[in-house]
Image (cartoon, helix red, strand yellow):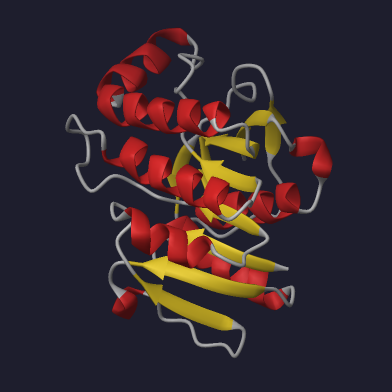
Length: 205
């Protein structure tokens, strides 16, 4: 299988690249700053590009079997449409090259689904990133792609525990966080299991 990973130099993205290579897949790592990706492998192609440039994105998607997005906005908690615009480029590139399968890592809270007072406070703090992720997800759905949307709880750099709890509706009960490495494990699981197509799944340790 041939994959392109957007956001490959990020915390989740690097784990995804390593796992895919370990499974014998050919990986195109799409990055703005190649020096941030400290991985070397004969099946790894590093594509130096900008996801806000449609031509860069389409060129990286050509010839792939699937797309994985671990993109994050560079604007932090500020108002931004960056994620939405990048995903519009990805969806257009997939349509152009007739690629259907995409896994998109969003965030818990894009559906207003985190319960309780603390959940409301968290979603208020993350208001603008969640709006941007929501725009991205709506774009993916609009393009009629074979998507899986992943909504992780708070990301940590903890060691992976090798399992996670899943929830289609809302979030896993009392879910608070999940290791980035476990998110990557779940990404690879969904990639190979068709039951996750057209699903939006929240995960937590």
